[in-house]
Amino acid sequence: MGPALRMGGLVFALILLVVIGVVTGGERFVSFGNITTILSLAAVTGVVSIGMTFVIMSGGIDLSVGAVLALASVWASTLSTQYLAQDYGWWIIVLTALAVGLVAGLINGAIIAYGKVPAFMATLAMLAAARGLAELIAGRRTQILDDLDPFFDVFQARPLGVPVIVWIFVVVAAVGWFLLNRTTFGRRTVAIGGNPEASRLAGIKIKRHTLYLYGLAGLTAGIGAVILLARTTSGSSTHGTLLELDTIAAVVVGGTLLAGGRGTITGTVLGVLIFSTLTNVFVINNLDSSVQAIAKGAIIVGAVLLQQWFAAREKATST
Image 1: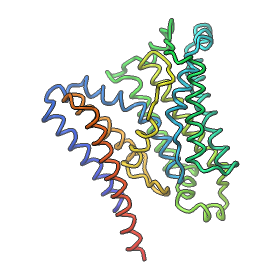
Image 2 (image 1 turned 30 degrees about the vertical axis):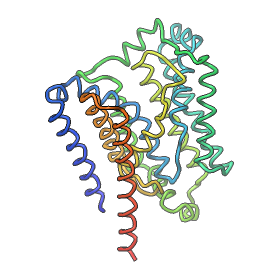
Image 3 (image 1 turned 180 degrees about the horizontal axis):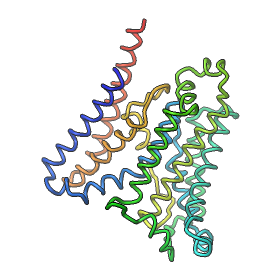
Image 4 (image 1 turned 45 degrees about the vertical axis):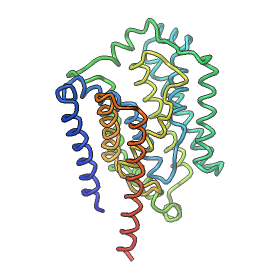
């Protein structure tokens, strides 16, 4: 299955969902307000999915991104952080969220690369620890951002009628595409996912690169926390619940192999838009959220089965 055919299938699936939305939702679905709503809801999942794409493409997995996002949102919305932001500027909140995400990601990377702990177990432990720390800091309460109009002036603005958080998603996706397709970092990521032993023999420092990859995933979780703070005006230990599943689903549906070695940022963006549009179609038609979850599960299983079938076919063709 060639890359063009895989991408064509994703575009066809998205168009099919749009047609279903138009038929069932009419003018309400195609309104500019609804389109920006779809994109706004896709922003958090989309940004975090970009980091997840790199991790999965290297043959790893990160189950902690949702909990790390919650921890970053809570830490960035504590009273002490808000006081500092009121005195020195809104960028303190942004810097705090990014730093928390980056440090959590680097801890994941260090445990996996140098501690030789399987990625599944290391990030599962971080999921529990980060969510627990977020609950302790917030006292299981929602922390409202108060007297921070400059922060909301920036992140709730709508240049050209499109919310800033959507532009952030666009910028992160563009940077991710450049990083993957135009830099040595991207080529090494694909090489490690395709054949770690060959990559090691070729001189790639796999441990250091793994550290960077999980740091990148944590950083995108921090950016997601900033977007969520701007959208909800609050930090909470419940933010990002099940986000790890949504991001992994979007990445896999977008064509990235769970075994690593192949994937695209464009495919991930389309995967995110497919799930965001599907959710919107269900909401507009007042359909049960349980049915929506079943539909998502069916799409994920179908995508994985297709991956396995085409991978087996390619292997048979090459031999």
